[in-house]
Length: 112
Ligand code: 5GP
Ligand code: ZN
Image (cartoon, rainbow, N blue to C red; front, top):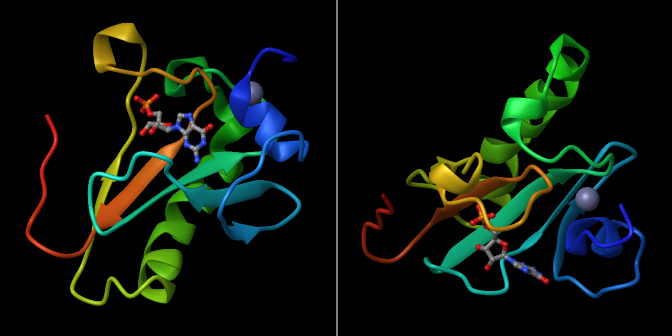
């Protein structure tokens, strides 16, 4: 996926503020945060949307979700956080490489 910005971040062709990395996933700060802490958890493998996932992605999706509370706590979100997965154009998705938004801190935040 040569035209995918998140694949370019995974490949090291674009910089990011890395929060976490292992062999399967990468987490980095959102470039336009809408809370004091706002980072994205993405798979290294290109998958466009949650709607493109199959049972083969079950373990990967579980890993991404289980990382959210761990990384949120490491980022200082002791009181809790929000998670968001926009899916498809109708779901407000702008980058078509699946990602979990994790955000919180400061005043309570919401996004519809
Ligand atoms: P979506 O609307 O697809 O769920 O969210 C995409 C998110 O990716 C947005 O919050 C946007 O700020 C973030 N984003 C887009 N391009 C970049 C980038 O090049 N670097 C980083 N760190 N975040 C990005
Ligand atoms: Zn990609």
